[in-house]
Image 1 (cartoon, rainbow, N blue to C red):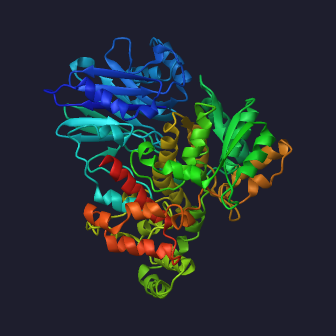
Image 2 (cartoon, helix red, strand yellow; image 1 turned 135 degrees about the horizontal axis):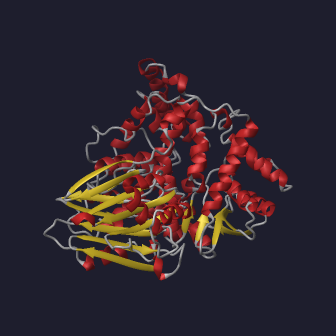
Length: 635
């Protein structure tokens, strides 16, 4: 886990060393152990290193080939690097280190951009190619976008970095908010890729590479998240026992690959299905004394620490639980803009930060259960959408008037129950498939899109749903497979993985996600849907596998079949009490009028409805406050 940045300027310009150092310093938290730089006329690379594999100076970045005309700066891990290294050594390549980074250089020499599809891992890298009397930079990002990569091209120049912060150091990048991004951020609580919150700065699409040479950018997709051809094909007719065996084998392969580390490694443990399976698999692989980490709460509604303790006991881990108090969260709020390069409206960033801080006190690498819900249909929102296929066939002209009338009547009253009814009728008035899906990505809390538009001064009426193009590509897929793909391309990339990456990097902790390993993705893509969503329960096959492991360990199987609890905090009540100062400070009418981004009266009505207990707007207000804190720091 590291940070990368770089520049490719016009031929008559030179990259200044001070500029590269400033970009590296802006992301120092990503790599607290070392820094490295490369300059060649109008090209430059910068790197911050968190040492994980091969701690020696031989593994320092930038890393070159034997002749010094190809080099790379890299963020992430290539889990199949040992197999690739053997193949490359057989082809005559010579290695100077034991790191996975050096494999990238030689694989590119051997196979060109075809090499990128052979990497099983999480990665974002920049590769400089100075061969044949030319200079080009390649940017590449893993298939799920586990590792971030931002870039901008303007005036024949390229600038890129692992986070937005280093790009703020570039004088020719205008710090202008993208109104369309802000509009979508308020709905989804995240910034939908490929946009960023800054106009003209983009996020490289997951599974894509970009080539920049002579001021011209080209690129293509080298890896789909889940191949649509496989999803659309007839699913394999396996028995449940055979499907379980296949999943267990893939999980063992994935975890075994991701246990490779030259620094201490542990595992996040919430007590849920995903993290519990990771811990059980570590036990199967003979890992003794595995350190596990949990955040607990005094409020039973949010606390899973007792379940995590039972899992820890069953599989013999060295368990650490931090009982978080409200004051622990409140002390972190002012630091969020420091840790997060662009606003993220998911309030559980606070819990993720506390968990990463706890883990970093004991280990440098932690396994995380991210991806299990998306691949194996674990979210309640997915379950609701699954049941709406029939309704989606009913024309909007028939649904709209009926549910519109009910919603109008509900809006005349007050209280959270009527608010929920109004939101439900909003959903049921959807005009097309894209509009239906957008209600279930992020959080159900925010208002309908036209009401969100009333909060903004800019006219956003022409903006469309950001994943309309995605749905067009998925048109031929079965309904439930389409739901999986939408959640993978949106919520997983832009909320779940972004949150895990930034929270870990805040403390120099590498978070690995075994469920997004190639082996498990292949199993998920070819698993019959009934083995995912069965009798109203998601992640059925994963639950059955955990049940088997718990029984073998002599523990109660109730842990495998309990309802999904989620990862939440009591934000609704905090905004009416200890955190009301945030509303006064960042959403006050005078400030909003001066800044000219949000309409003061519309925001005031939102806040008033929440404070008077007529509605629960906590998620939307958190998004507004998060944006305001971010804007105050960077713009």
